[in-house]
Length: 462
Ligand code: SAH
Ligand code: SF4
Image 1 (cartoon, protein in one colour):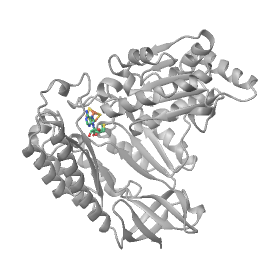
Image 2: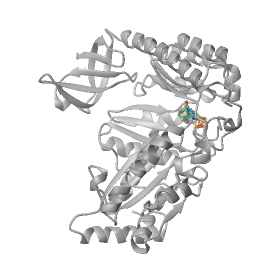
Image 3: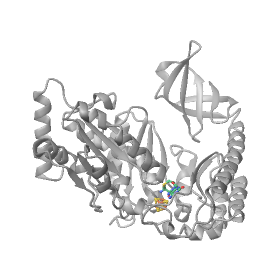
Image 4: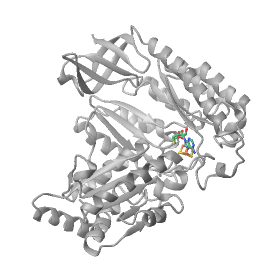
């Protein structure tokens, strides 16, 4: 396999040889924090390590190489990573040859990479989100020259052809684009993942075909804003066209995608979803706030009226389609009236699932400088109010599924009272459990919903 530089080739061969001569190959452990994009990156990190002849470890304790792929979207994620890196000190003391790497969004934030190396002198490598392809070289330099690696240059290239070690189970995540150009005022992603760039459709299609051949049953197309896919490519393509191409591929699989930005969701896309059964009837459409004033300050480029118009269109064109969203509570300057507008919109739309976040000030973002006068205690009270409202709506949406037929893709089973219970998602993304046999894992199964819990459904095989 060719990975862009001579140095990588030499590095890969060196580690391969090393693993060959050892009684046991070097064992690696990759821990992902954050979003699906990070998980997809981790699958490439693991792919490179396997290519070098390393073997996956069951846990950090028995690893020779530990990689933490971090998230920087919210402050709490940073804190968790710091705690977990600190805990590795003991392992390093026991095993001086242990190689520890930290990569991902957090290390691209100003001052963080340096800070990690200063605070945790036992870390060997810190590298940025767009440098995964250089991992073999970094490991080579750590082993042969005892170098400390600190490389976080954000470049906007796409490195195709990296090996991927897909996680077990029926779901396969495929990035269709990288970075983001939207600069929502609260968000660190454009700064840590670089400018938006789309993969060539033929590379995406090739990867989807490969996944289907590997018996993957759910293709999850990933991008920070999939609706703007194709910008900058020579070919006349957009997300609707790409989705149509994927849906036309032969095989027993279904398609999901994440994330749609409301400002760019086209009628053409809804048409494509409507006419293709393989595309799941679930749309995640982050709202963030129901107040026009807050949306403007967030630089979201839509109003609550436009958002509601879009929801009406989805409901009309895709009957039965479930909806989910993201909400930020306590954005700088948000008033009680603003927050109530969010509550009201949520009652109107009735999302089946809602991901709720307390605003977190991120370094380098525009919102970092906005005056923030709402006391934390009040933000937390609003947050609790929102959670309570969504509990009721979510439970109602689950109850509405009783009596309906679902196509469920179980990804695991559990033994309960001597019975085998399959667990998986249906088309509309509800979690469904039903009694069956072990062999049903990874197989689409028709189920009739007989009971609803707050966050899951119970069904019977039809
Ligand atoms: N590109 C996607 C996902 C971005 S991150 C999108 O545009 O929806 C996922 C979610 O994290 C966002 O939708 C937002 O709700 C939340 N988020 C991002 N930055 C945040 C911040 N600084 N504070 C709180 N929540 C944040
Ligand atoms: Fe962040 Fe906005 Fe881009 Fe999503 S669309 S990644 S919230 S800047």
